[in-house]
Length: 241
Ligand code: NDP
Image (tube, rainbow, N blue to C red; front, side):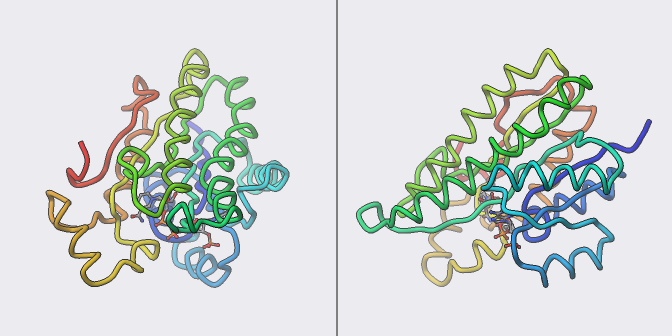
């Protein structure tokens, strides 16, 4: 079988870097997309040999151009898409700036439309595709200070189910992985009492590891998961059931 091509947005740091690495180890050809942290991306690429590409996934035209570049570099169309890029801009709603609402929704939700809209037509015509969208436990349970983030991540879940229905007959599966708190730079900012409080609410008693999210993604894109579509797979240590 020819090597499948996988594209991971936000694939150079945190959870995405672990997903990119797991896919490479499983013998996929991998493209890791990031936005602007060149130093982190270049270090990641040097250490792993994974091809890196930089664009803003919140912008549709940039996605269209960037994906063409990925296909030309890796020698074929995208078989597997992992929509992982995400940001937070937390504030209580009564203090949230409209620009921070828009930025979070554009980066976490509109990006998923942009990327899927660009790769799904080719997946449909080839009769194969695997899409995994990374949501968040806070989409399911809400979180003080995250009206923008939890709304965007909940939007990803509805999108996942709809695209799964639309794509099933074309042998394209679309699933969501729903992480709880995972140790990355995004959660490193949580310190002291707040961190302890969060851990007290996680039955397994710790933050998750990036590898624990990556292995869930790896399963969902594998042939072993060929009958699984439209599902939400929680990876949260029992935090929210
Ligand atoms: P990090 O902040 O560690 O990494 C984010 C990655 O996304 C970086 O590679 C970053 O690029 C990229 N990125 C951000 N915005 C854009 C953009 N507009 N265009 C292209 N790339 C972009 O995040 P995490 O690894 O912590 O999180 C990964 C995903 O998992 C996110 O969707 C997050 O919401 C979700 N999640 C994380 C949890 C956690 O506890 N960490 C819990 C639940 C969900 P660059 O390096 O250039 O900045």
